[in-house]
Image (tube, rainbow, N blue to C red; front, top):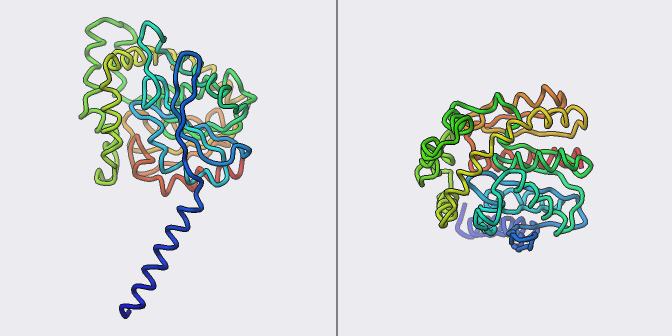
Length: 309
C-alpha cells in the first residue's frame, strides 16, 4: 500500500474509533446525600430507559465498571455507586455507622430512592452480591433481572481461602481478627486482581493501586475486618435467598472467572439448582473477570439485558 493509501486507511480507522466513542453516552460523576452518608456514583444513559444498578465488591469501587458502563449506556440507564467505606463514598467512623451488610444494603436502598429509581436490574460482584441479594429479597417487585459476576449465593461457592475467615466467624477473638490483616496488604490486593488471569499484563495497575490508596485511609482496615466478620450473616441468609430464586424466578445470568479462588465455579453452577433457566458462563480468568475479559463478557451481559428488560 502506498503512503497516501496508508494515510487514508489510518484516517478512516481513527474516524471510526472516534465515531464509536462519540456514540457512547458520556459517563458523569456525582454525589448523593443518603441520610448521613455522602455516596459517590457514576451514571450514564437516558434516565427514562430501563435502569441497571451495578454493585461492586471488595476491595474495589465503581471504577471496576468503567469499561462496562459505556457498553450498556446507549440503551440503558446505568448507575454504579461506591459502597460506604469504599472508593469515593464517605467512610463514616465505626462509632457513627454500623459496617454490616444489612446496613450497606439499607444505604444503597435509600440511595435508589434518593436518585429516583424504583425498578432496576442488578449486576453484583463479590461484596455487592449480599447487598444486592438483600435488595432483591426485601423488594422483589423492584428487581427486573440479575447479573452475577462472581457474586456468590451458595455455600459451595466458598473456596478454601475462606477457612481462616470461618474460624473468625466461629471465634471472633483478637487473634483470629489479626490473622486476617494480611488480606489487606498491597500485595494481597494485587493478587486478587492477577490470580487466575491468563496474562497479568492485561490487568491495569491503577485498579489495585486505587483500591490500596482507598483502603489505606485511617480506620479503614478495621472497617474491613468488621465487614469480614459480618459476612457470616450472608451465609445464614442463603436459604432465604434461594427461596426467593425459586418463588420469584428472576432472569439470571452468571458470568464467572473459572479460575477464581475466592468464589469458586461450584457457586455459579449452583444457581441452576433453584433457577433451571439461569444462564451460566465461564471465562478463563480469575476473580476480577471484567479486567481481562470485558470485551467478551460485555456483549453477553448486553444480550441478556436486551432479552429480559
